[in-house]
Image (cartoon, rainbow, N blue to C red; front, side, top):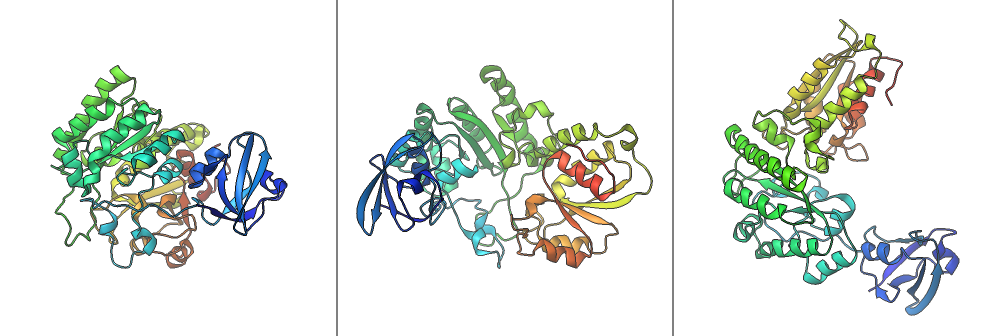
Length: 441
């Protein structure tokens, strides 16, 4: 196994040693380099020996550098290997529910533990061998993010659609014993892995020293499920039962473990018509990328920033800039109430809850709103500018339906401003669009 070096950073340790583009990295310190995880771990030392293949022949290089200083080698792919794909057939797989015409990259079913370490992606571990598990432990790859869904082996096999799912608790025990920490999630389906099954899952996961938290997320169902397993969204009373069970465990585990451990997503509280918990209930917001605490953190940060405004600006006034916020239905009422409670002088803000016609009306989160839905439903709205959450867009300012932000602006004939998820981001955008000459840092 070897990896093509496509370039070497000028002046880097590798460059000074004489390694050049076109060489192929084979070993570091006598150990075969499998991927970027190995490369990072093995190259962190002050003194090391690299073996490269030059024109097919092995050549060794002795290198001295500062600890953790990069070698300066660049490879064909960031991971130095292909993406590891999913081998599961989950009952609720979101990829299987995509509409016709969705971009090809959205249809890739990845399940790569390395992206869990580097990007916080959730993985199931069903495609991780015992040898690979040993490598995770040896490389101290922590924390990982694990899609558990349930700990009962028979039920997990049913939910994930593969007998490999049965191995989970043994894998997690080995990771925990090896000093690897992990955050967990359960995507819950009504009547399948909630109730007694969820109670067991919480009990068994919370007994593992390496388990740091467990997010509970309601199943996401689109309008494109023909031929798939019959599933339905949570009813309010069912969502309340999940939250009540979680609250029971949260109180118990806060006393015994010093952490609430179990964190229902914002969607569960909204579906249950249950108040979003206060700021301290989310501890370090360790599961925020899974939709846990997004609204509370937004509210907390917005309040903190709002209180830094001059008193004369912290009140509602007639007139002013007419602004709009376009978001998913689930967050609209919460954001609307927050802006009413903490108004800004000179800004007249209306919140518009958009229906998702691309994925289906049961998808109500803001991050899955497309450019088409935005432009169709906000066309004709009388406002000076429209604010949207930045997570509607890829880094290249493209919506999920491949409409660009520039195209959306042209169709609407007014500015469309992506806003970061921090509360001060929202407040500063409001201040800027309303013409205020102040910014909160």
